[in-house]
Image (cartoon, rainbow, N blue to C red; front, side, top):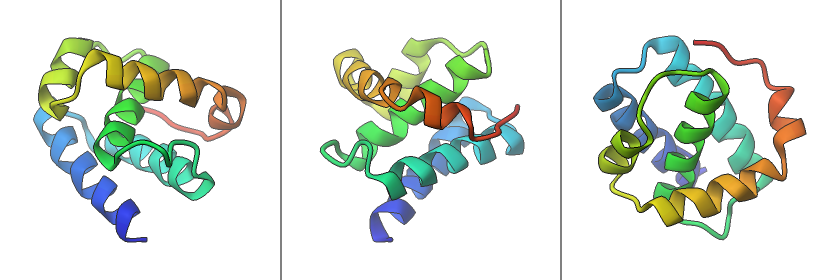
Length: 102
């Protein structure tokens, strides 16, 4: 969909700035695609959704990127990312079944 494409474009830009390798970007893309298809975060803006997914992936894979760096890169507030992240955690079990790596 158009929104998914918009999110992937943002994700790619942020991944480059944050210095993600291809595997980490691909992991984010897999989670993002699932979240978009299932409409887990459809009440939130594409920017908020994308940043929360980046945060989810770095947390899950224990990638040492400071949360503040994500907030700066994605230009979102801590409150925004937390709201989306908490909502994502409702689907923790489903998301954990998606195989991702760094």
